[in-house]
Length: 384
Image (tube, rainbow, N blue to C red; front, side, top):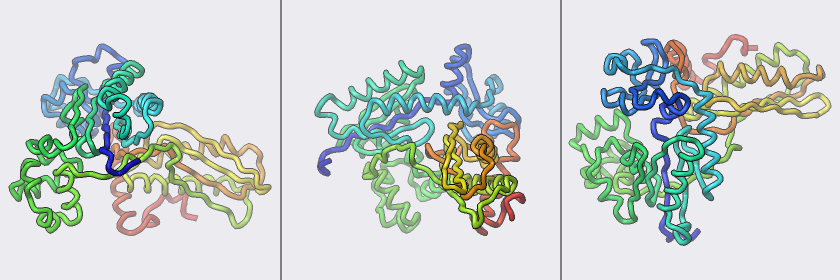
């Protein structure tokens, strides 16, 4: 691709994805304020409908607070299996329609249409794709189209719900200028408070702030934020590949038939990989277990699973796959576990469970591992 050619990057985001799936499955839920997440007061809001947002309900809010803000809301325990299935359907429609796409999370995608404007306008093409997704899956989706990922993503958020926007080349700064700095994808709560303390509330002010000053206050991130505020982002659309994976395997010093030991090892492998997922803010939807027998025959089995980064879920699947695989009762030389079909996302581990204890436990364990190393805390069965 010629580097001087203007880029055409689309960001697509399914509107209140979990809510839309629930309404597809039960049309009586249309128009009602809905909250999805753990049902108990200790639960957390995973997603909520626009009707509930009017009352101030937001995702990641404690369920107790959400119920107080919107007492009429219907609270539904989420169904990750259904959401994963619908996410897959949308991915299929996009994969069949465009030359290059990146699956950024369970419900959002980047598409590179550079060069396609010569054949038919990129806006028209994306409009047809949006209509196709609704037709094939029943799910409403919004999109932003511009020269880069940042501006398109911000555009999508302005276009929602069920909308679309094109930001023409050269008008990025003007489009961004009146918006709140909170609209910039990188700006979290702490950075937002810091910038507000400096008197920076709109992207317009951020555009005019010297980048050196932002770098002094925020380090390297300051320069990146300044560029984003000015509509500059050269990051490429990274082709989504179901092969993107993380894996680990162990070859035994001596071929073994100790099934208890092997199951303990699989537990440790699942634990290690799940920690890696959470550290990188990733979720997996496919697990593969591999065994190699003493005679070098290698067999693998894989399983498509709802998106997760929870090791107790992955351990159970690893054991289940091993039990299906290990039928020969021969000596084993090697075992391995691989997680693939990775996407961005850090859904609270127990988004739809009734208690936050499990999520609290994972967070505490992850903090200890990050500080003292992965071996600092692990399940007793894996210490051999």
